[in-house]
Image 1: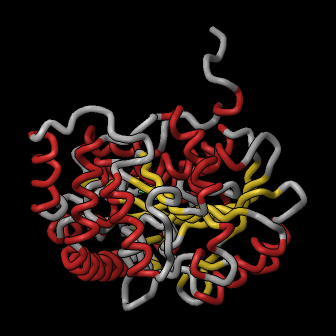
Image 2: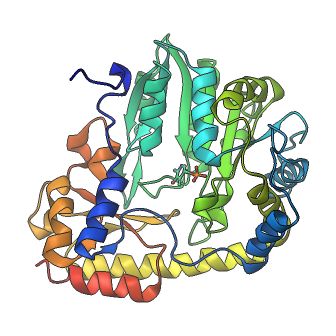
Length: 387
Ligand SMILES: *Cc1c(COP(=O)(O)O)cnc(C)c1O
């Protein structure tokens, strides 16, 4: 039979998360693969969603999002970062950050256009760049001084006459990097100099550790006018299944993104939008506790992985630790990730799937720590049998 899938999407197959989560279920393993918390968001937020459903909020909401969420997002960007957006024209609700990123890339990059991304990258980026018919230009993040960062010359060399977009994820999944002001200045220089648009994925904006500050690219000089910022409720409020995200950008970019988004899903589900609006206004103390708790879980997992013989990179943010498998005598992360469930009953993600240059990430596994302490402890105990 002929291949049913269009050529530009061939090679994207089943996501690694589906494969690894299925393996976790089949082998009864502890799943530190996919990054979803095993405890729910703030109770009053869950109640707000349930109340919205019971009150009959079950028809199409406005395509750009319910006004109360757009106002809550505008207030959040202003209070936290000093960034002013008009909720009516510069804030736009999407089905998770995933759709916000997809609609932005599809709206702003066409066939043959180039999109600069830092690799490893979140898996949806490569697929949506391919869907747009655009070309990705990866810039490598490598370990240096205990964190992953890029070489400014390599960033500058990645930009050419066809480059339209730069896609930036900070705090970064899977590398765990929170880009510093100096790094962001380098990125902003490139964006301004080549008249690019930046699309920023800030879904972990609240989940940074050791007092590390998340700095939105849009706050840098001249960058608000050329940045489409994307975030969502999923990670901030531990409701990854709600798929409620938003875009903040100058009106002309919002109009472009809206033109695409309205034909992808038209609107995002109403009850979650109401609950997210409530939470952005009233549950930031809960988020501060989540952040502190995740910091402790990060330390728990990092020291456990080190004790088990990995070299672990302690992340400055997100849900994930990168672990170098070479000290244990392994070299191929994909092979090890496929064997790990049978060997010791733990699932991790081979980081190489997030690279164009797979060899650069071949020896890393990504472990999630957004799990109950006892789950982390049991996973670490099992991993210690690897030696
Ligand atoms: C989880 C995640 C997303 C997806 O966010 P949703 O709101 O669930 O669509 C996007 N980017 C990164 C880096 C993530 O880790």
